Each structure stands twice: as C-alpha cells, then as structure tokens.
Length: 86
Image (tube, rainbow, N blue to C red; front, side):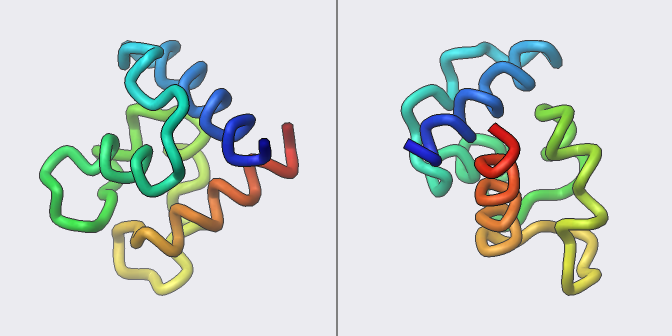
C-alpha cells in the first residue's frame, strides 16, 4: 500500500512535468527507478530525476554519498520518505 501511494504521487508529479501518467502506475519502486533511468546505467542523474518535480527538488538531499547521482538504494529512501508524506 505504501509503495502504491508513493508511486501514485510519482505518477501525478510526472504527469505535471509532461511524462505520461500511466508510465509508472502500479510499478514497484525498482520498476519506477528503471523507468526513470533513461540510459539504463543503474543510477539516476539530475536530468533524469527532473521528470518528477518532488524527486528533482530533493535530489541533492537524497544523494547521501555525494556522487552526483542516485543509486537504487538512495531512490528507495525517496520512496520511503514520500510514502510517509502521503
């Protein structure tokens, strides 16, 4: 349920930024991560994160290792944080 709420928020934010709203609906956080990871390199860059307004705004905070990109684990933390807010 928590993941569904988070993904719903992700879908709504994505729709607001021009990404088709149905692209991440019903996906696990891993599937959503892979959908956002446009070049399939296993990390999310700021440019890739910009498809989601909330993710883009929190990108630097979520990048806990300071690498300049988000790993699957860092994205999962975003998923957990966004679920608490829902």
